[in-house]
Amino acid sequence: MAEDYVRPPILAVEPPSRRAAAWRFRAVMALIVVILVAAIVFVIRSLTASNDNGGTIGAPAPAPASALSALSAVSAAPPGR
Image (cartoon, rainbow, N blue to C red; front, side, top):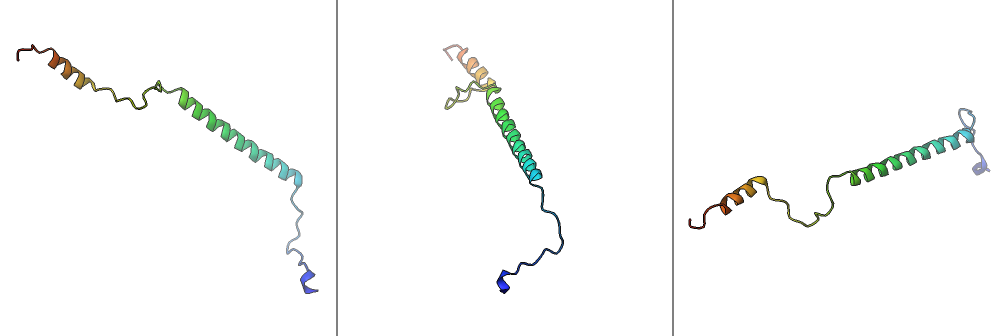
């Protein structure tokens, strides 16, 4: 019979309210949904608001302005030199 004995709690307290637990769950779920929506909006805005046209994948980087001016100076030299 010793296995069937359940010791009473040291401090008697009322069990937590089921209604409070339900509202706590709803509040946490609403917070998670708000965070997910904010993250999705942030990602969409960062993808659509960029100045990049999206067509530069694999394309070489443009030459710096100093290299372009050096090329124009070389091409402007007379062919006899």
